[in-house]
Picture (cartoon, helix red, strand yellow):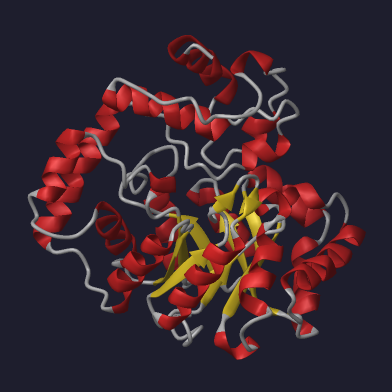
Length: 365
């Protein structure tokens, strides 16, 4: 499968998940600038999903990309997400809405979203994979893949049952590489076993590998060049079989920096690998909440509690001794109903209900 997707060779991907916002709406002028700079930098791979940014992601992509550039200028991935269908008959209408929302006639890649043992059972019972393969035969999607959040055994089962899968999108970064909960290394090895190219998500773990504690920052500063994000992205991209590294970019500066890193891609040197290992050890010793800010939890929370923002503030307090909560809007930790919907959808499998009392107690919210 290494020859699959010749159009993607160590590609930088633009994830439409963390776009700049103007209030509660996507900042369209700034997003247009980012799209233009990304394409001008020589990259063309975009990734979205139906529920990203409260449903705004697909429309923003249409406004900023597909209505402004010819179809051959870009590659586009969309996903079949768990919370938008309950039976097979609902999949095709959803797919059609996604095409319309994005303003395209086909998707280059269509992923069965956030697969786990539980979700795979639902997708299998709803014949989701079979429906997607029918859509592929009709020319409405070019490549079938999955995004994955579970252990190696589950991934091996899925790839064995559906060898038609052409690509796997994995959470892969230097902090999660050998983490026993995320099992990035084990899942990566399963992909290599089955000959499946890998698209990386969360290479900087939702930005948590950019904002480092002082003792970790000093280690990277001692290398004499390169940003924190560049080390994380180069780490992920340096493994065989990694074909694209996605970044949920939210500023023009991030686009320009990441494009510069990947345009003349160089794997980490032995000295840089050693520095990464030191930083990893420091971060694990801090016991921070490993939230990536994907915001899947906020999409299902009936009390609209801004869980990722609260966890980010608590991490800031643990990291630096202080945290600014002034800009946080939405429900309070005390509003939690204990329904568990957030935990069911959380890719990091966080004990959110158990963590919210710590937020309330330490931040006074």
